[in-house]
Image 1: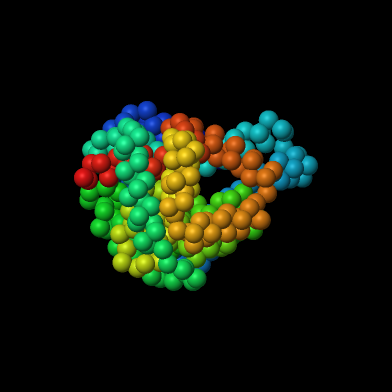
Image 2: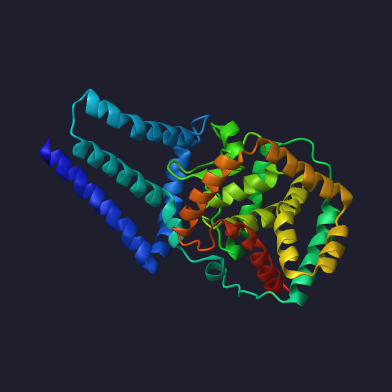
Length: 348
């Protein structure tokens, strides 16, 4: 029994050492992201795609229940000492920690978008931002179409095709499967209360979407979470890749979803960088149908949102991002505009 415990502890220490070494040594982060993760994701996703439900969601739920109720069982039924109970809980959390990082989380240690693509960062100037916004609004208005339904297989095919197209030039892996299986979040009503539309399940390399997603949001959200599945950890970068994939599609509904997906970020940056008169002029150039759609989407999610639960989730997720080298935390989502501007300037 003692020998088995020693082996278990040695294995855990080795795994934790690998995680910490990879986080500290840049070259190891690159080796993991470019060579190790594709193998791990192919293996784990080949298993998880066999299940019709999100096994990662179930695993997290059962783990939380176990951590909450196991101490009660261990103390009052098995008569264990509190010290041993706490040590067991800590050991379990360390195994989870190692699993998370080895299965996906070490992608946080890779180079960022600019480092992977050698595309130079372009600083904001009024002229550059105005040029970007003018071009974006023209394309947004031209792409508008009434999206009333979700063709999930079509979105899957177009997204896989899109990532295969941009893989070599924009620093992202090709999808390991021709038809990656997206799952619906197990606890959709609760997830809608915190305003989350999709997530990456790192433990089994599966990505999930909120079951309440509206048709115009589905393609861009699918492509965003697929980017995470392909090893992208930054929310801004996932937004960037989703935009590139969707706006290159020949399917008008998917193309419009791509342009619509960054509208709030464009307007947020414009409000911060422009005068009130300039912002009002910009806003009035957007098609009324698009403004109405964006407002309806916002109202739809606000009716499901719980401020208390949402604030707690936002606080925890902000800490999580900052603890994984995303220093801007949740603000990282809006940094997609900087990526788009840099890419457009480099391309032109």
